Length: 357
Ligand code: ADP
Ligand code: MG
Image 1 (cartoon, rainbow, N blue to C red):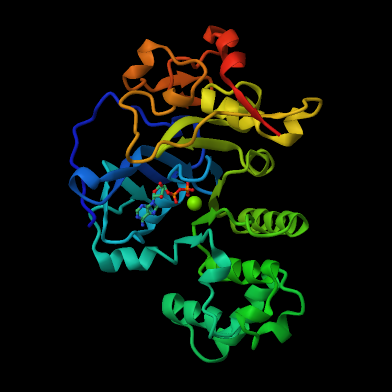
Image 2: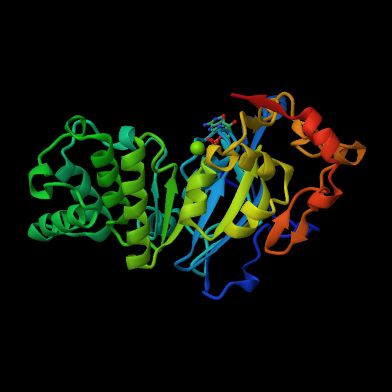
């Protein structure tokens, strides 16, 4: 069930402010929430998420597993199951109001102007279809291509995604492809209609390190050449550093910090971002151990009433028992009362952080 929540503007501020950006706004999501189930069993997987992206821009959405990254994007794509209730104050794409448009109009946008590389990309390929059949279906359905135009475009796309020996891969089935090659087919399908926005959901997670780098290089090249906007979803801050300018950090269904890449690495404003950075091996050179926050992302049964990070946060104080305000930072916003690192009590920090090898 998808419904629009009509809300009067509240004190909520958007977590990334497009006013300072140069290009026209492409996607503007305001106060998006997703709840699974009903009544006492209802679970809010995405909570009041606002995201903006301008044309041709790359933003990264980062957060540990279960923080609501994929569900946010699936809500945008209209791909959630009927058990999901989606509410939003505003979803504008390319000056069109996605909340009020008909299902037919939406079908004209999803998969064409907005496309997504799914997290479990390899299992998204149909095992009984050849590469040619999978790509041909997208071209016929969304672009209405027929006959030899389909063949020509398929080959062009495979060459664009640098598929090795492209001509001889046309009749091949997914099980005959390596992980990297399957991902190239998925990328070819996603860019087949020259989308204005590409959502890449953990595009390299299942691949080995060398192939990961090749796939990220490919995505970056295509993004630049085609002037596509891209939302890069990842749990890996290392990928964020190399591949995007702006970043939104998600925790337990909320965007807790937005910032730019240099700022977030030098001066993380949210304790959760700080903890993510402390868990990056490259940044912990010289340390015996990687730091990590104790505990796990709250489940539907143990959701705190105030700040959602508070049970795990080393800076917790009584004021954290009410939901934190959204505050301005030099390059974005933060959902925390301890956003100024100098105001944090570092003694309790060292004492409370758990470590892991
Ligand atoms: P991420 O992509 O950040 O790892 P997800 O967006 O996939 O996290 O999931 C956010 C939360 O929503 C998780 O707790 C997950 O278990 C829950 N969730 C995702 N899909 C469903 C679903 N179809 N039904 C119920 N809960 C779901
Ligand atoms: Mg995910």
